[in-house]
Image (cartoon, rainbow, N blue to C red; front, side, top):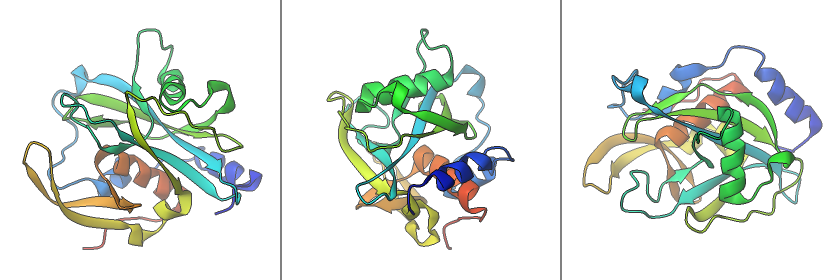
Length: 217
């Protein structure tokens, strides 16, 4: 999928209509995940960015990060979108998303245009209400990963997330020993992209394609 002005205009136009919403998100959720959560009213707020940009061949890419391994982090080592919690100094979730993008990956706030906002998503295990945004920059950023937060960077073609075949299922063993059965995930460069990140990316994928993109049973 080539990175062109026409593509960006088409994507931005998609946000003028209804979003696919939680139905699309939950097509990539494991069976035991419920919504709404009883403690959503007490949730902390966070924001993330799906950042689109061209690679050297002018193909459209997005960036994911592998989180550093912290024993107290419930999402330690997982693949996620760049972002983090809102601070008292953030005037809005969008501002927080851009700030976190710059802090985690060194992408200057002024280089990113926000095209739209996807449906919010509650993560019950860490009690965060996440606001996802779609951003775009016209050249590949010179990524500077924050060493205390980012273990690795995964640059991935956007087209990967638009294909049904990239959605798979497997049993997933968590660090606490619990095994989740038949968890939907994206297999990205050998990494398992699941949970909230997969749910957010699936809503974006369905927004672009206009198709229901679910894991085959």
